[in-house]
Amino acid sequence: MKKSAVRPRIRVYQGGEVALGPGKVELLGHVAESGSLSEAARRMKMSYMKAWLLVQLMNKSFRKPLIKAGRGGSGGGGAELTEAGRKVLALYQDMETAALAAMEEPWEKLRRLLKAD
Image (cartoon, rainbow, N blue to C red; front, side):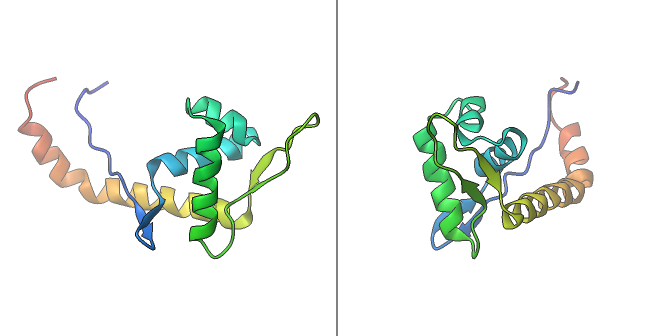
């Protein structure tokens, strides 16, 4: 594997705050996979409270909530992406793919100027 790489870090701002960025997208992905906000937080080595604050920020930044979380307890609450959440996640991933494609040619030229891996 090549050591040199380029990665776009796209951030979507709403009202002066980062409504969506790499970390929030990672959280959305883990919630989609696990069905649990606490498990998503664990996977990211993040406290549940931090994850919950990120969910609240995302949910208030978009017209419709991105994550619906059930109340915890003995039966467990669970969490899932809403239809809007699935759409936002897919669109963000599309933006990342498009950004990488747009950078391909200039990145190859820049990579040649780097020291050998």
